[in-house]
Image (tube, rainbow, N blue to C red; front, side, top):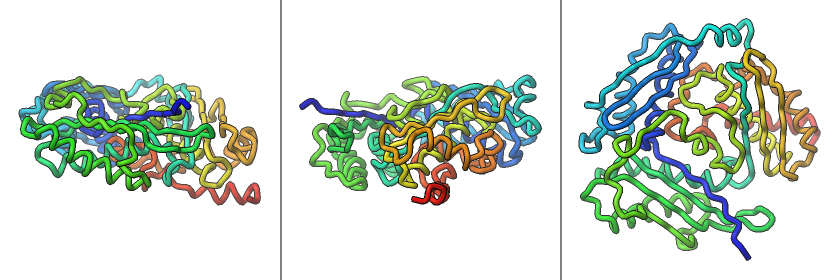
Length: 381
């Protein structure tokens, strides 16, 4: 019988696109820390020893953008000149201006409208304790573990990628882990077989064990398949804010909306709407109303209420999808202002999302399941 595989990938925060995300969100956090009403849409590009910060920022905060960028680059681990991208030597150029007044008049506190049109999705399922799809949960956990090892091993460098293929049976249940791929940047001194042994034992094995799998039962493991990964990071590939949108969400297991997250303040529903959609989907699953749920929201710029709300339980729901949609509309304020208040989004909490992940990460407000009991009580489960 043909295998039914689903594959998701992730990257470390030293990947060039993630470096850009981390800088964008660090600048957002710095603005919100001083001025919670800051309007931020910060984009970053990084390449060989160069960083461009641009976008639209309207804030009362006094922020040193280049200093923040250097601190982020240093925290990620780019402190070695031979990597071609170093916190102490990188050239930083800022091209930032204020937000368009045309956009601002539809999103101010009096109007409270969405910062743009668009659709966004949130998902949850019972495959993992954090109610995330297993392929992306494993890829994310491997990436985060790899980042820990990068900071503790002088022979590793910050850039890395992970990928996991999970096998499912005909009913959609997890049947096992088929393939794991890990690539990590390293120095010339790290002999390839030693590196592969280190990653296998120190990264892959403990993460699989954490999720109840034995590395010896994985059919295929590829570690630095080309045999060498010395040139990497922004020196090896240009990085851009918002280019890892599938990594940032569900690894392709659920749908993705039209926008990225990092560098955007919560009036941008690309971000806040996606967080709210995850919150609602996770609480439907936590309440036992379905085993797998996707929630879609859609907005028009300058309009507060969503133009559409849709629940898809893929045939696993104890209620109809229409009933669950009505339940969410009844219990959740889905205006941008309501979402911001519910999830307390005007706080400097976004750097963690760029570094560790946006979903399935403990302590992020949209990961709470406080709505589940209310949902159950309404329908008397």
